[in-house]
Picture: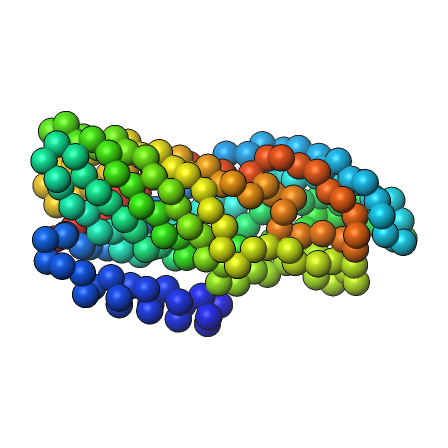
Length: 212
């Protein structure tokens, strides 16, 4: 968690040195993980027992940071530096000698989001698209008590996002959909098992910020 805060603070400090032609201000976001419940397809290649694994849900997504905005005629460019956290929950049956039914395991994710959005801004509205990079600052997994567990998360993950927004003076109200390129199954593994789940932890986010 300390590393997470240091990374976010360093990036935000750097952002404040940008040219004054850009407007900068604080921003907060709340959202949900759009992925519904789904079971993994597992090809066991390790020595532990057979088990069933399913993604069953998530907590809300919470973000805070800075937005950086510039109007270019009828177009706009917007970037953000956001410290984001959320949890994904899984259900596992029959791992090793487990006899209890359907224990739940949570993985807490702490990331720094670096999106870049460009688009059209007719009047007070904004419509844009762009890439997003996610720097993993920390991850806490309840799976870690298992000897076979491996954290296979990439240090940096990528995605794409769409935005529809509205400007009310210096206030920006944006609705975003973040589509991640990595699947939920890419973030962890058990031994040499081959886990298949093409779904990703895509997010729907409502953001409010001000740019001075």
